[in-house]
Length: 426
Image (cartoon, rainbow, N blue to C red; front, side, top):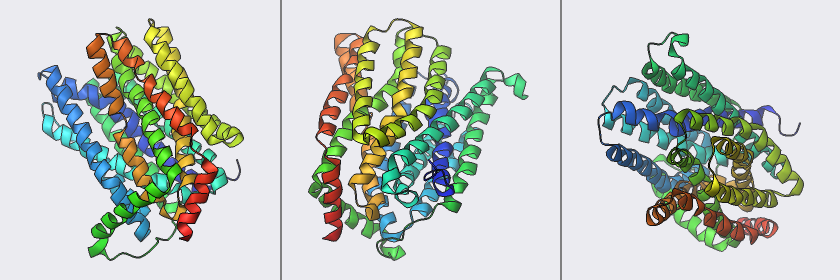
């Protein structure tokens, strides 16, 4: 652990601590509820759901389009930290903006939210790529897991504090829960800003593959994107891994996004569901570290396959779920494997790609991450609507884990590393 617990790694991992506050408190926590009850109060429920879904889809689409191009630009110019700072600042400013959005200002709330989501997702493209600047290949598993672990802990701590503000606003000198939620958005922005500074100050960056004139940067990025597609086709195991990742991470993200909705359909209270979310966050902290060590011991690919198997069994269990105690148990188990499957996927992918082109290839990786949770929710919705059973809808996610696990099993990491090296030499 002494190899990875140094200033460079900790500074890099603290960005996970920083931005996870947005993922937990804004994306998964307060914004969806506050949007319906405050900014779009009085609107039809289906209308507000459509508006929120559209904002999420547009933000994801922007990143899907930009991520590979921005990654290619950052690699070519060696400016990953600068791009990370730009996107993080966008997210921070727009999250701050939510504090000032008044009741009934639906469009302004959605614009701030969508732009904050673009900033959040865009910064992660460059954050992921910087792992090759702070760690040796042998330490990718532990370093990646350390980042996710700090993310779970940091996001969980801030979320717990902001939940306390909304439940007992008078304790904090606040007038009501509305003021508390708005203050929570401001707290997220400040948290994100402060804990981004160590990465910007102390994480080194490898030089770019070539210098780029500012006037040609966009064209160069698109040209590099075309070349990257060609490279992915040539790197068979990168292509196979990305296909597997798209399927199983779609399943993981669908569980995250649909769990609260599924719990509400079973009649569980919002307070119980928030409690379950907090359980997942705090269990995820030590579990992500443990999974990193497990990946180092038995191999990251094998550890991911174990996590995928657990998720498959969870979807089957969810079909028979009928008590809040069981829901809490599911939250604990999800916390045990969620960080592991995410962190080890990042470290396996880092091994399969040329290190000097990491941002470019991580652009593809994050692009697929944004495509994730599209097929899964659609599958859940269609199966549920067709059969009239939300339980069968949740069970349908198991198909994504089966297909993703089979494709991942076919990935030969060692041969993939050799192919990446040959690509660099040619």
